[in-house]
Image (cartoon, rainbow, N blue to C red; front, side, top):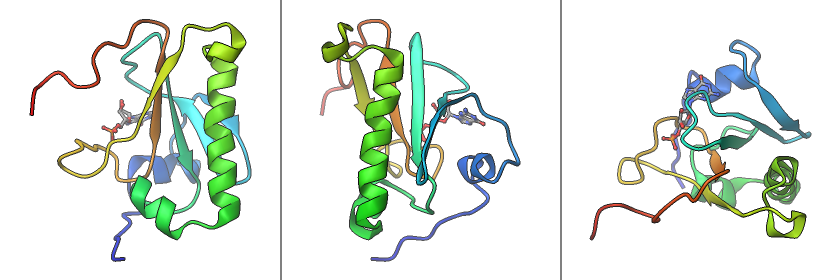
Length: 127
Ligand code: 5GP
């Protein structure tokens, strides 16, 4: 494993309190906050507090406590939006972009929770 984490990325600055965010949920190892440029009526980002570049980095290197905390934090973020089928909601999409092919803009692991309308096809372009 050879992941290089840039601690000057925007989400690292949010975690250090150097930039503001609209917090949705916070736990020991995770933070959920509103996306600054929402692509849907509900657009929440969930990040681990640890220095992980991408989903695969986190899944391979994080502790079990971090992985459990993060998984629950994503669930709590969805629950707070009230969009889960178990809460009578119409659903949501969770996605995580990684690297250049994944079109990742911020190199700190985040999942997007998108909800509040039909989110449309998974990808627009064909293979
Ligand atoms: P990516 O393309 O890396 O998957 O998504 C990065 C997301 O971070 C984008 O949806 C973008 O709008 C969001 N974003 C970029 N800068 C900021 C910021 O300073 N604050 C917040 N809350 N979101 C940001």
